Length: 62
Image (cartoon, rainbow, N blue to C red):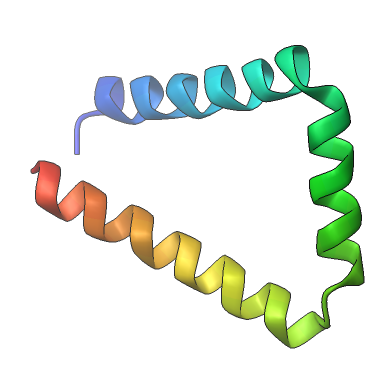
């Protein structure tokens, strides 16, 4: 993959994260509280499924 594409992907992730904190900070706090209340294995599964979803989207895009 081209370094420019990787930087663009990183920039997109930072933009989305920044907008979430800027536009809905209380929602972010509630989501973090809900994550903290989840069992460790459930958080691991959620993280793995999220990462897998990202891989699938990238695979479909290219």
